[in-house]
Amino acid sequence: MMLPAWLRLPEVFDRDLKLLLFSMSMRRIAMGFLQVVRAIYFALLGFSPVEIGLLLSIGTCVSALHSISFGFLSDRFGRKPFIIVGGIFATLRMVIFAVSSDFWMLALGQGVGALGEGAGAGQPVVSGYISDKTNVENRSSIFSTLAVTNALAATAGSLMAGLPTYFQNTLALDVVGAHSLLFWIGAAGGLGSFLLILPLKEVKAIRTVGAVETRNPVKTRPWGVIARFSLIRATSGVGWGFVDSLLSLYVYVQFGVGGEVLGPVFAGARFISVFSYILVPRIVNRFGAVSTIAASRLIVAGLSVVFSLTTWFPLAIALIVAMRVVLMFSMPIRQSFAASIVDPRETATAIGISNFARMSVRTIAPTVAGYMFETISLTLPFVTGASLLAANGLLFRAFFGKGKNRAQVDA
Image (cartoon, rainbow, N blue to C red; front, side, top):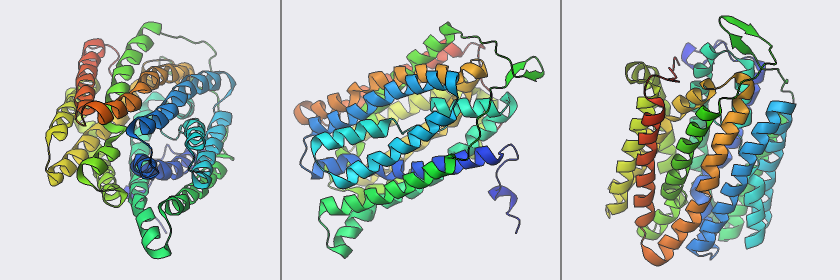
């Protein structure tokens, strides 16, 4: 039976890209519920905001090292081995979370899992694989499609965040047992993701010279562009780290609601973002990629400040949805832009360096935000993050908004 046109993948998706898409989607489901329940679960175990922030920081720190090391090595030795290793570590984190609630075992799980978070199109190895497989004209379509499928997968994952409450009520499990069951479900999904990427074929990079595509070993590495892009990614990483890392904990403390409420909220934001991607080509063609990305950062900064000041729960929920939709809207634009500023053979290295800059400075955000929560103010992390996101938007405009290195999205 033929699927409707709107349900079919673009023709550029060959067998390997389809396998990658489905594998990434399965890992995104786990990331969807982890984003909601992780900080709340740590709090239910009795850890303080500073301890929770430290646990989250461990994952962010390892993720930074993962980005630069996996990106660099995959440019030299191929993408597939590192995509496979990522699948193994992503599954292992779920197993560790499922069998232990000890602080140091959870820290180990955070570190191991961070080596397996390369499940998104913006990650260096995956971006490198896509660049190897495709030409410039097709990449924006692929990134937009992956953004949609990842958003749908994360939507499903976010909805699963309410399962521990359901397990407690129906299976008479305690809080640890209820979350353990959810983590085992995540481990099963991680195993499925791993099996899907085993048949993946390794490819050599396509390098475009004029109108001719060649398998050319010549490499260029524009360090100035990479440095500017890395600085931009650093301010974005630490800014969003302050806003997002303890967001679910903030709502739990401030309004007394957990994953059973936040799961559908996060899912709704993800689902709405799917439809927002339809507007990407029109908006980018009108305003340009750089202006669109910069504007999204400024809007998110403003919404974050308002969110930190509201005490009305319905407005807080609406602002959470708005912040996440606006931020996610710009993701495929930024991913396509990142893949366009360097030679395809250097994509993973360039994105790895920029991700390292982003994640290394973001490492401090959860711990500092936890300290602010515990000793200063619940609102201070959001104001701090908003200031950095506003600076990020202005830097993007200053560095890339003068006609150079503009990426147009034709999704």
